[in-house]
Length: 495
Image 1 (tube, one colour):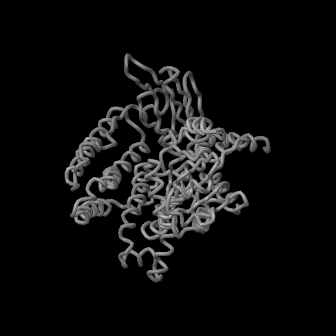
Image 2 (image 1 turned 60 degrees about the vertical axis):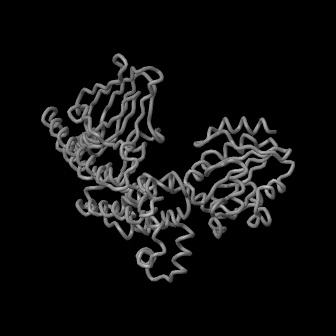
Image 3 (image 1 turned 90 degrees about the vertical axis):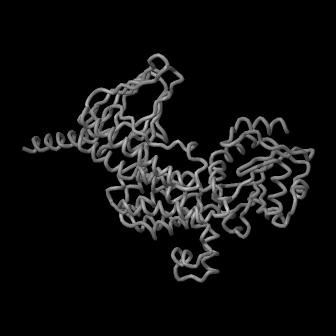
């Protein structure tokens, strides 16, 4: 009897594991240069959850055959790219798919067979706007008409697909959910960028009000608090874009007492402005999330913020993570971001050391010559950055350590000049310790920043400047994202 019970339990466990796993055979015959890659569209998931513990970041392979077990609890979209092909696999527990990428003539193609193929044939939805066609529009009417046209075409394509391929109910439900939020996602993603094309107009405020009015109307037409929405990658795309663009829009309105009281309730104007200026990014977005979203959508919006923190700025990361854990102690996103959370808490404990040197009087420098005088006779790499600058954070995390390791036994001095960070000395010190930014430091005033940009030809942040021992200098040729080997060669030529 006991043996029978054990066998039954093992059988149930086997069936459960099988039900949580999809088997996919990928066959790539495009060529050795036709790399095949996958990434997971939002809501946030870790690659290791789907592809196993060995997976890091985007999962990819170059040629031949790859057999992969994918761990899924429900229908899950996986975005793929192969040569010129772009598309989605919709993978369900128990699927056994064969996905073949090949080149026929001068065209790349994909053939999908096996169990689950009915959810994975070519669909051909239009999911992006031709921005060039509307680049000069100051009002939203034409782009809204185009979005409506695309929406109707996509609905027709989905109905044809359903009739021809008989996909599962889960697939149909996912398509319906995605289509519900696609027009809003397209509009928010487009309008957030479009303001830069008309912001110099005299009637900018009136024009922006028209775009905002249309956006509000579209948001009111769908339920953005619907807990089912968190399963949609399209809704997540909208949510991420909305948090970014609404944050930028609210920056312009922070002098408005009504706006200030909404996001900093119970505070004096002076206190609210001080807190806002100390972190107008991460902590302000957190305030937006808690003001505008609730329930499952609030949790998802937090996940979007954590995703941004993971990729970009770590300002106040530990405090935000702590509040998220307290609010959602059983959230699945805690597992997704576990490596980042561990890293944040380790780095948050770092303190300034004697190799992190603030140049005396640096905050009062008014021209680049004063900087050059301080490092006379040295080979120096200057990193122009800012605590507010996401790409700066990315480049520091990616390149600062390897560059210092490469030049560890060579006479190279590292200098970091922070820009547009006046009055944020304490925040800068925390970040310098967090990223272990050993070297010389200056928190530049506007006059110094303007002079450096003018004299070096730098046009944005991050930028890198190499100072030679003879006092001459040149802008880095490494570009952005930084081509590290190019910068290393340029520094070595300066030694």
